[in-house]
Length: 456
Image (cartoon, rainbow, N blue to C red; front, side):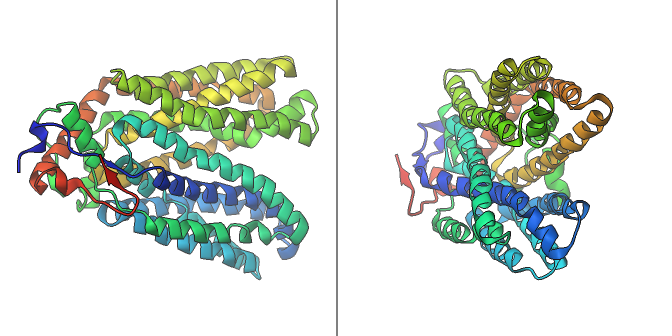
């Protein structure tokens, strides 16, 4: 068999829209049940006679367990069938949601929530799957659509959770997700497992990538020991610039999610319902920006802008910080509200290309563990709300949010530093995909078909 790197690009496996829809559904579940939890707080406190401070530890503990769980999922995703990893996590998650609703004490409820938190860390496996399901040239768009599931879940959790809790009690905030979890688990089990690095290989052949440089592990990435694997990731500077920049920008994103409604209540004297309606503009902006940023980036990449994902991530993030600063300093609601919409759109537009950037520079055999690093970095961004609250005690909420807005500018500047190394890091990923293909016997070794896959 001839070396595929020397001729035309190999046949590309096309999996269609089903894998993306199913993986987005896991985001619907994970984001939506978090919003449902907020609807159940009063019922939990009343049933188990606990305070706000005690209940407040539930999401905090879930985040901490989620970080630990992400490293386990990342390791398994690099070493075994990723669709099975996500399926098992989703099945167990669904059972734990049911157990949460049946809890007879706060201790049992808290333990069930810890299990839910640890099992929600399927992101590393999902990111790895998306990177191999869809072409490199549409990776940012795919990431944006996958992440949009979280917005859908939040809307369903807030709306549906509120209706069910009001009608049947707080336990239905958790039971409502069990049927959907079961359906998603069945869908996941039916998904084909894509071959690792197949899309990188096709992209590299099409772009006539050079031979692999020295220093790689070749076929040893997936079974590599923890120290070796993270040592290899430490040698990818654009990865760390991307991680740091997205984390810094995430401080503002999380602050807005938590304090946005309160800002409009306190700053403009709106009722909770009115403030919630205005804050919904941020959700609209995010719903447009998440897939929009990915589509724009991929279009620029196909037109030859090699560093498009770096530049769109950096510029969108920095621009959002300036727009939010203007929004928080605006003296009138008529000016602050549209600025909030534009700022949310820009900040969200940076997320999908940023996630794609992190995949671009990590070889296929390490993407699960690379995703674990992203999950850990994302948890650090959860410090945004308490930091904003601390500033608000001394400056007031409006000034605190205005002071937080420039962090998005700083985050964009850090991401921009990745432009220096991005092209070289991508070239290593491409070259490693060619080396692995050659060692495995050519392009056909990179083709794993399933019921939803075709070749073209």
